[in-house]
Length: 132
Image (cartoon, rainbow, N blue to C red; front, side, top):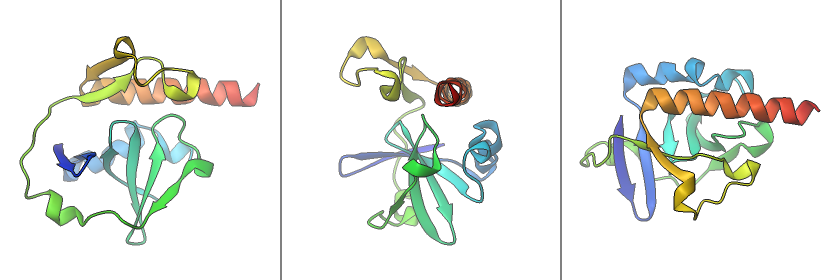
């Protein structure tokens, strides 16, 4: 994974083999046909379909929250910059569940495998809540 800042936006771009993470994150259970490129900030997925870029929250992954990004910088410009992080920021209680993004007690730093587990866990909870 490569990590970059562009202006005030943090990007985590997945390496080629990490594009397979779409199945680990189970994104295709909620929206299909998109390629996982990486993360925007720490709480949105960066997706690609038909040469267009989109973002969707990591929790909840919901087609209704999918948003096209028209002003994204070119990804090849990012790949030439230096990596600065090895971890992904995570809210212990996701914002959609009432977590406070400004509360430092609500923030932890996790590796990619932990991130996958947390995203899938909270999306399962969201799905359960949504069907009740």
